[in-house]
Image 1 (tube, chains in turn green, cyan):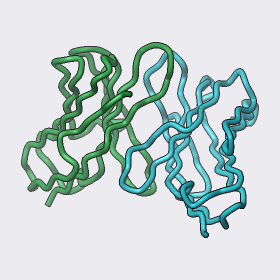
Image 2 (cartoon, each protein chain N blue to C red; image 1 turned 60 degrees about the horizontal axis):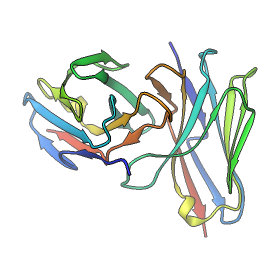
Image 3 (cartoon, rainbow over the protein chains, first blue to last red; image 1 turned 135 degrees about the vertical axis):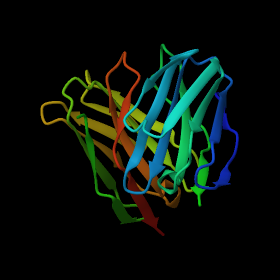
Image 4 (tube, each protein chain N blue to C red; image 1 turned 90 degrees about the vertical axis):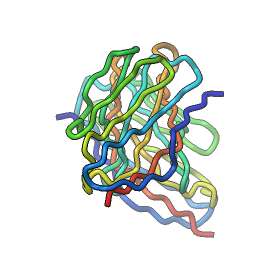
Length: 113
Length: 112
């Protein structure tokens, strides 16, 4: 059974803080993704990574960066958090072959005050 | 840019009735269409998917239909039950690429 975990379920940060959201998957998947989920907007892709140290921008990368130093771990970084980054953040992973299913983590609800 | 429109945004049905959610995609190269279900407070999970080489796929009470010409695909749930209440997301993708384009979601409420 694929397991994708995220470091926190709820996080409260102040404007201007540097924020790290971490995601770990245990299935040796090469592809990993960060989405943000907002009511009425669905899931929007922030960044994805198709291998260690490889990353590509998604649809809304502004204000975010990512890090993938190990295959199982994909981190989302908010360099200077702002109130408009208050959202639910979902991580996902997917193997590069076979199924095209993305396996999601439980999400991190981030509030920036 | 690529876009997936999803309707309706909310849907209420009586238990036992059918529910239909519709999506339209813009990129004619899309050839993989998954549907995800997200229960309250839980992670999205794949419930059914379809590739562009078939027009319909069924799995017990759920089915997905695809009209490539019109660039439409739909989720059909028959004999709805309270546990079907959730937010449903459609998505479009191109096999071999990494990217999904998700619809905006439909909140389905099944009334007992």
